[in-house]
Picture: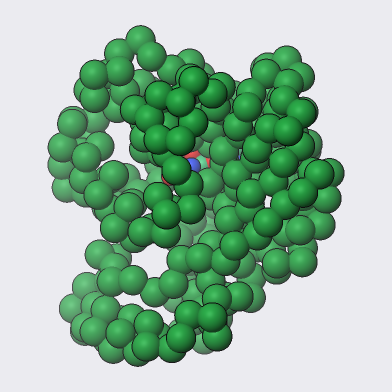
Length: 252
Ligand SMILES: C[S@@+](CC[C@H](N)C(=O)[O-])C[C@H]1O[C@@H](n2cnc3c(N)ncnc32)[C@H](O)[C@@H]1O
C-alpha cells in the first residue's frame, strides 16, 4: 500500500496544477506559496513559522517544501521527509532558489517508519498527511517517538463533520485527491482519540469558505460570489466546529 501511495503522490504533486508557471522555477514556487497562504490564511495565525529559531523541526509529508521553507527562513533547523521522490526534488529546488542551498535535510522517507532516533526533534509538523497514509496510528506513534519529551506535534486532518464534506456530498463534487489510495476524514472526538498517546492536545477547527481558483465560469460566480459571502456572514463561533481542517497542537 505504501508503494501505491508513493506512486500516486509522485504523479499528482499537491497543488501543482494551481499555477501556470513552468515547474521548478522561482515563479512557480512563489505562486504556489501565494495560492496556499491565500486559501489558508488561518495557517500563519495558528503556526508561528518564525517562532522555532534554533529548534530541530521535522516535517513529515513536506511536499514541495512550501511550509518547510517558511520554518527554515524563520531560523528552524529543518528536516523534511516525503514518500514522493519528485516532491523531495522540488523541495530541494525550492530551497536552492530561495537562497537556502545546502540547508535543510530533505529526504525521501516513510512517516510510518522514520529513519531518526528517539527524541531527536523539538517539533514535528504534518499538514494534510495523516489522512493519506496507510496506517495512521503508526505514523502518529512515529511522530511521537522522534519528539523530545515536552516536544510539540502539529497536525492537520480533514473534518468529516464539516461544511466542505457536506457540500461535496450534497452537490456530488469530488474532494481534491479523492482518488488517492487512502483518504480518511475524522470527527473531532476521533482525532482526539488518535492523539491519545500525547500528554496534552488541543484541536482547532479552521478553513472556512474562501474565494477559490478551482472553479470556473458560472460555478465560480455562484461559489465565490454567493456561497463564500453568505457563509462568512454567519458568526464564526456558531460554525467553528464545522471547519474543514482540524489543526491539532499536542505535547509529548
Ligand atoms: C496533500 S499532500 C500535502 C503536502 C504538504 N504537507 C502540504 O500541505 O502542501 C500529502 C503529502 O503526504 C505525503 N505522504 C503521504 N503518506 C506519507 C507517508 N507515509 N510518509 C511520508 N509522506 C507521506 C505525500 O507524498 C504528499 O506529498
